[in-house]
Image (cartoon, rainbow, N blue to C red):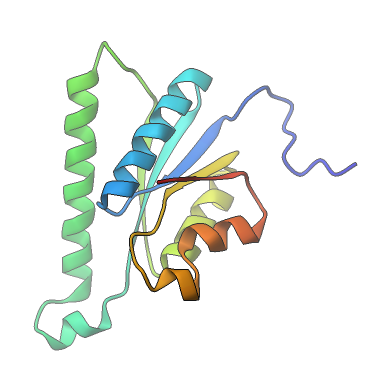
Length: 149
């Protein structure tokens, strides 16, 4: 019998959630926070800074643009956590990586020994053909994946 997910504990200890500022990623974060609170798990909030090659040509260095997005996301998360202090407590950490969102979430889940990965459903129509990050994570079959609409 395979024991890939068994670590001798009941319930998840680390839940990874991908956030990119979209409505579905915020809903996924809220869902993951509730799960983490109920399970007393660490919530690892992950933003993967995409490599924006075209932005350099337009005069805005890609690293600066995506770093600003990461800072805005972290500020919003901190403000929400502060507003909910005493009402809704959850242990959380913010992580950011650069590169492809799928590869970044895989790296985060592996590095943090995630017990579950939660992402928002893609809002892009083209992903029905090519496949979204969520679909790729599910197909990887390495962790339980929840896709929040």
